[in-house]
Image 1: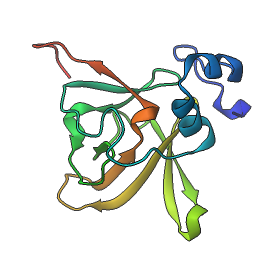
Image 2: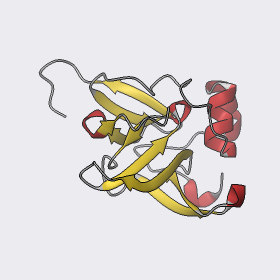
Image 3: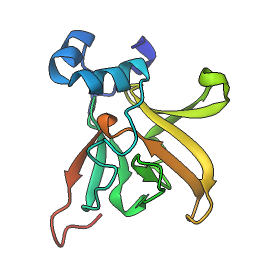
Length: 145
């Protein structure tokens, strides 16, 4: 990662050595090398538990479960980030296509892509994410979102 993704005081970014020691090989490949997990295989693609999805690298809140929907894609899909400061969008020209990549704004971890095909969602967007880039922080019954 570059110095521009140094993290914040509240959510510091671990060193590369610490990442290799703390992440699974798949989590490292997805978040640090922009890999993509296979559809319908990730931990959260069919999860409906309430809570906050956080960056597996730096623990920043990324998506609230209340914005998660079944897109049929096989990856966790959300119609909006938890805050305006959660996600960084970048042009991705890999695979002979132009797409919008999404990364954690705090640490630069690759999360997935955003597509303008969430036509039945409030924002019209589908933030298609890799489960390997997320950690679900469950919300307890009665706890506010």
